[in-house]
Amino acid sequence: MTNIEPPTGLLDRVLVPIHRQGWPFIALFFAVAVILGFLWEPLFWLGLLATAWCVFFFRDPPRVTPLDPDLVTSPADGIVQSVASRVPPPELELGSEPLPCVSVFMNVFDVHVNRTPVPGRLLRRAYHAGRFLNASLDKASEENERQSFRILSETGREVGLVQIAGLVARRIKGFVEEGAQLAPGDRIGLIRFGSRCDVYLPAGTAPLVCVGQRAIAGETVLAALEGPQVARKGRVS
Image (cartoon, rainbow, N blue to C red; front, side, top):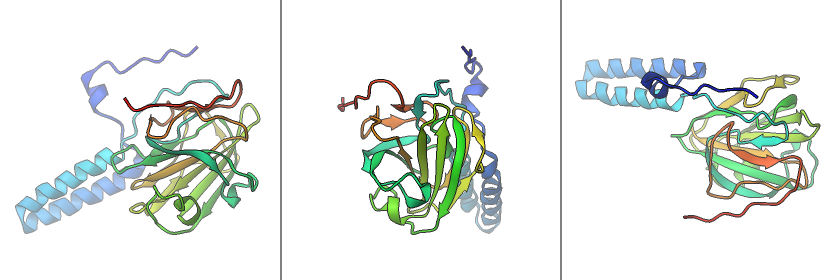
C-alpha cells in the first residue's frame, strides 16, 4: 500500500502547479497586457485578468489514482455527458461494433490535462483532422478534430481514449508515443481550450458513472474491467 501525504500548508493548497505547456501562453497574455497598458491603463488590468485566467486554465493539480489495474479512471475533469454504446473511430482499430463509451465534457474552467484511463502499454496513437463543432454534440465524435489512443491494460484488455477538439479548442497535444508504458494516472495529453474525452471500454463492460455526474481526472472510477458488470443508476438530489 502506498501512503499519500496530503498537502498541509496553506500555500500547498492554494498554489497549484502549472503545466509547462501553459507558460508560453501565460507570458504572451502578460506581454499583451503590458502593451495595452501603455495605450490605456484600464486595458492593462483587463489584460492582467485574462492572464490570471490563463494561469488558472493551465493548472495541473496532483491527483491520487487507485493502484488497481482493473479500474478505468476518468481521463478528464468535467461532466459525464454521455454513457452509451458507440462505434469507435476507425483509427483506433477496435473493430466496427459498438462498444460502451463514456464521454466527459470539459468547459473552459476545468483542468485540461488529460490522464491515462488505465495503466498499460500504448499500442496506438493516431491523429485525425476535422471540424471544430461544439464538443457536446454527438456528431463531434465523428466530425471533429481528434487524437486517439489505444491502450493495452496490465490485465490484457484494450481501452480506447479519444481527445476531441471543441468549438474554441484549436490544439490537441499528446505527451506520449506508441510503445510507452503508462503508470496509473500518467498525464497523456492536453486540449486547448475546452473540449471532450471519450473512453471506449471492452465489450460487456458496464460503466459505473451516470450522465450529469462530475468526474475528476485520475480519480473518478468509470468502470471495472473484471468482476460483476452492473450499470449504475443515479438521481439528482
